[in-house]
Image (cartoon, rainbow, N blue to C red; front, side):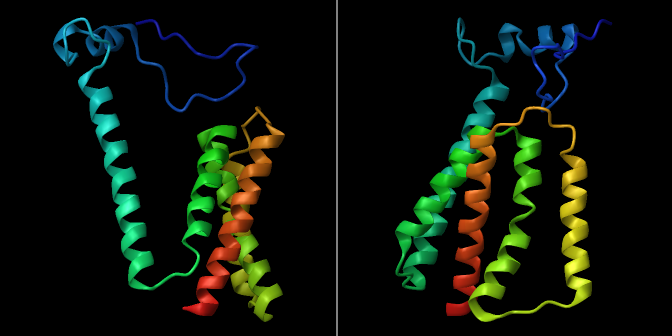
Length: 171
């Protein structure tokens, strides 16, 4: 069984998952796994697309219900926050996106301190520091630094922190 690696000196991004073995690739691309004859869409791909579509529709419905129920005055800010989040996913790979989003707690703590003077105990600060440190250890192997992507993720973190601090204050 030969396992071809997707690593090369030109491609320094880590793969999200291991590439399939040759036998698995053949099984995945068999004609009975395809939805339509002559189509490249497999049952697995169609299932992924349907799941993504379902999540997107449910997110819209949840936002509508939440915003309508609580008479939230700034629905545009939530839409803008979601657009920034989607843009940030495009700029960095998934492991680094997850790592950088773990720092949202630090931004939220800072914004709450600036808005209302909220102070935290040393044990909470240590716990948050441990979470952020663990996230950076998990994402330390990311070799594809994209300044634009990182800036957008941090902008998303700041906007999320402002949103959470505002909701905590108002609601």
